Image (cartoon, rainbow, N blue to C red):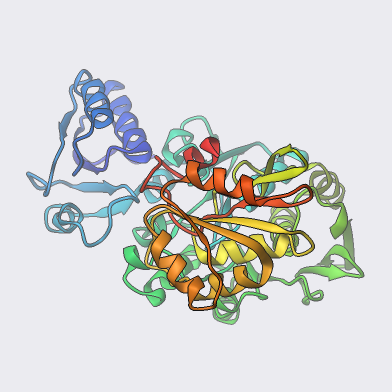
Length: 449
């Protein structure tokens, strides 16, 4: 492993920025001649607490920062800092290189990587891939957007340990050498337009997951989704092995559904795995997710037997169509991970045979709500809108002659939903928005729900 550059900067003191700073400090304390300055535009009590802990280890921390104070050899930017911010713009003026934490972790690791991206389903597929690989006896570290920052696991992951990473468009946007052995692209629908500036830029940043792959690598692409299907032929033309996924058949050399059974098209013919109805995760979208995960595991060398047992034993991940209780005959489902309208459409389809009281709202990320309002008007007996975006969503629904209930915050929304629901109904928290108007993140919102 190459030594670190002499002068480094870290942008952001959230989870990933703090993990990067700790990693660099550990290298310095091990004898590497490096110095690091951490910058954050915020000035909260939590940031002051983190800054104090780093300063005790002789790290310079600048809060309420608007620009870097001096040139550096390398700057690692946290995903929460948008391209339009003064702090991030200054990084490109002062730093020889600006990269993301996922890129930094990749460059510092000795492990082979499997990367999962897409607008929706990333967490489920990342968790399921790791579960399937462990079932097959492969040592795995799960990292990235799913929980542990990748840089926090690289020292413990040796050359025989796979790093299975959920990677966001924010992280991919600042990658240069990132090269997963297996990549997975699930779907591309409008999201984070406020951060990327356009759907085209967002899609291009997602597709950077394929950028450095070659003939020895595999790209798993869901071709049922028009946004991701666009990339299959072009990636294949570069010599990368492309495994197409579809729940509407069995693509040649790919993964699909045959007579209701998840099936791989192997070298010697179809390899049946598990009946779709036997999956522990519900909804058509999770059939697609399971196919993508199985294809990724198979590409890594996991046997069909291990894939079968892993698919059968996998349970839903927290905050993604997770039943959290049944009270007075009403099922309460936590889908807080649904932070864009496309994810809400998926959630509604998973309860097509049920009466739904839907909780929508939070902070808009530049999305339009007409399509989800139209779907909710068709599928739901009632809709409760809450948070910053409540009036915007309510307006879209009223245009369809569907009058939602308006609540200032989630707690009031849950009270309203409970009063509207009857035994046999589903109260579905699938917000379609970010959580930062009221919560620390989608997981905090899900726990409160």
